[in-house]
Length: 352
Image 1 (spheres, rainbow, N blue to C red):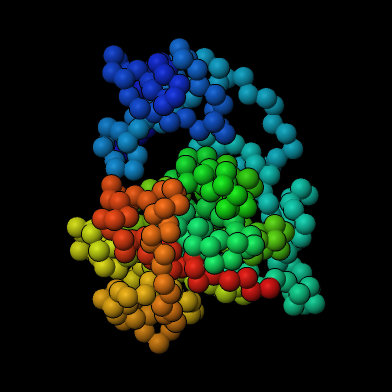
Image 2: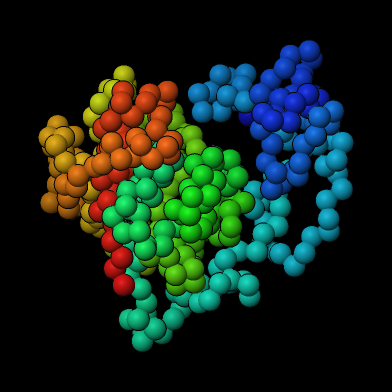
């Protein structure tokens, strides 16, 4: 059966970076500390070996499924009553930011506010990302444009689901560039969990008081070499949720001048498909000085969406020390890829 879990027993032989020995072979691994706790040298573990065995580019490591040595003594559940990863062996209870007594401020009932409150509601901007590699450049550029702006990240489906996996999120938080992290189902493990993307955005604006919500998938992206079967389609649902909440919405286009795959250069079919399928207009920031990419985006946008050319500070970002590689290519090798989220981030402004 093709969908069966590929589980193997192993032993932790190194904690950092995590390395597990399976049948005499030492293999890189990753363990979700949110679900499994800490891993120590000598621990007996069960790992899922599917990604490494398949030589997946963004998943080149085994994933620890359970720690047999110290992972069977979890504390009793608290008052949480909503499951994430429900009806899988990794289901776990969370307190959703929507409808929870512990939800910050008005977030738990923000969408049901009366007309007066809605009129006073801050018109936060929402930037929808096509993939995780756009997050750090977009956040950095937005902060350069307006250092006082409060920016948070809503992690959607389409890529990796564990909120703790992203090194980019951790670094942005450490630098004080990112104010918070909400993981929306099926993603989990952020500062707050949300059942839906709409609920996450609504709570972020009305409860967490973010000026800007940047929403997109976690690391990696699901793909099938088809028009609709890929993780980039999450952007369609995210943009519709933002628009339905009445929020100014923009989409960062996925661009590349160095990707050898024709379907991703200069504009990815991921972005073109989403723009053509959107039911309402959005803004599409485009890095200045790229007429070929702009023309392709204009054709997909038609009369529906508004393109806006914005300068992209590639040199400043390259000097920032933030992640500047995509698919093994540096910012010098594929500047257009990074120019897109830099332009998108620079276009953001506080709307309230």
